[in-house]
Amino acid sequence: MATILIVGVWLVDAGSLSVGATTTAMLLYLQLFGPIRALMFVVDDLQSATASMGRIVGVIDEAETCGIDAERPVGAQVLTPEKGGPIAVRAERVAFGYRADRPVLQEVSLRVGRGARRSRG
Image (cartoon, rainbow, N blue to C red; front, top):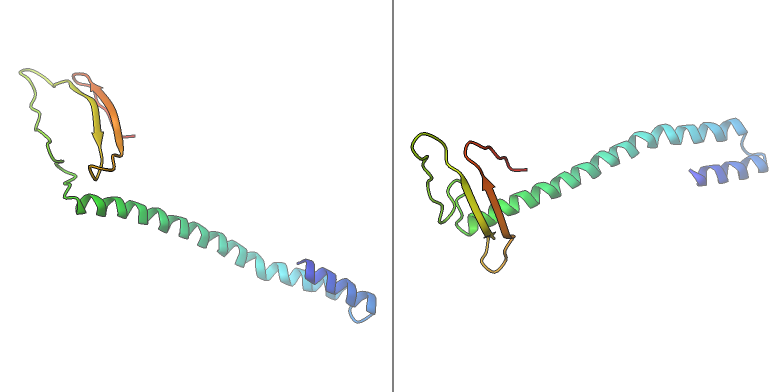
């Protein structure tokens, strides 16, 4: 854009071009490159989304490679309600990792009282 203005001023000063023609050249540039600039922002967002999807797929693939079943993790036990109602759940100092030498979570504790509900967040 600066180049168009500099060349335009130089040509107007030399008498080879009118101010109107220089203005027209600048407006044409803005009309052509405005949509291209907007498309570049869309492409940037697509690249970020693709990278994020790659990380998500990598985590899923890593779990499958290590033989982890997301529906029933290794060592999981089925909890049954006590007579007459729901149970309370308590987990203390739990660690998790897709590999034993690379823990992801350490020292996590959770308490869910009878009848309470919790969601991942």
